[in-house]
Amino acid sequence: MKLTRRILAALLVTTMGGGVPALAQSTEPIKLGAFIPVTGAGALGEASLVAVELAVKKINDAGGIAGRQVQMTVADYQTDPTIGVGEANRLVHQVGIDMAVGPTYSQVTLAVLPLLSAAQIPSINVSGSSSITPAVGPYSFSMLPNAETQARAMVDNAMDQFGAKKVAIFSDNGAQAKTAVAEIQKVLEEKGVELTGIQEYNYNSKDLTPQLLALRSGEPDAILLFTSTGDDTANVLLSRAQLNWDVKISGSYGVSLAAQALEAGGPELFKDVIALNYAGFTYCKAEGKPQKAIDLVEAVRAYKPEAATRYPMNFLALFYDSVFILKAAVEGNGGDTSGPAVAKWIEANISSFDGVNTGLAVNGESHFLVGTGALSIVKPDTIDEYGIQERAGC
Image (tube, rainbow, N blue to C red):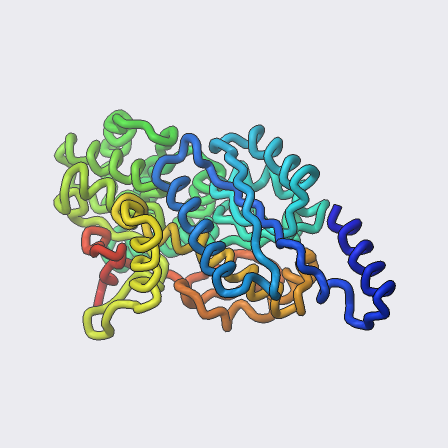
């Protein structure tokens, strides 16, 4: 479909005697597919939708991408890989998308990437499984730190901040978490830290006391907690409180999604809890708060007033920046939306991207844009009205 449009554009240029390349003459909309779990993912799905809608609105209001308006089509994959594949087929073969953002859940991303890769569709997902490699998705990048990056940081944080010598692992049962658990075990062995137990849970499980009781029997100094959503973080911390267990927690990025836990049980739930967050949403008091994060939240408030209080702003920023990264890559290539051209531009230029998130980087062996330079250790309960958190150790 995209090839047909380009051939027609080229014929038109030839007929009119023009000498400008056909791609530069195209005025058709750029079709953006948005893999968003509108059904079944709660605040994360809703935040993703608002982020992409807002980014597309801002881009179109400013003239579009390389002079072309952006037309967005949502693919509600409902956190299900099978549904995700069906939606990917629809976007690629029926809608004829030029580029895509999402999915979030790693198992869905792994299921749809072969379709996107075959069609040379550039995309930016928000998934963290280390199985998502350039070989699997040569034209796809992730705005989530991969499991290995988070695993190493979580272990280091437990040792440095808590002096932990023996730890337990608690995680959800998603593809990213399974990869993270394997990576954590490698790092623990490398650093000589004792592993006292491993437990996992299903997404959105409410009562997690059985798993925590099993972990408590090993008497760990700290739990390495890998969650993917704010709801799961709240459920873990509420269950810990019900057991009156004051074990320390070194958490993943998901543990910094603190709004639900604060609403459910207040800041006391976060006693002895540290987590990872995107550097663009963190600060030390001596530096002041990041203005780009504040500006984004104000824009969300103006666009959908209820959204800024309901959704995790740091997660919303991932999808928001993703659209602007694709915009920068297409414009940096003179309007070329093809996967190879977009991927090449991102690999060469992402470090200079001026977005809400800072410290983005990439290399030929990994397409995860968020490494240790884009993450900070935070105290989750310090989250303010903009979703910004104070760094631990300031």
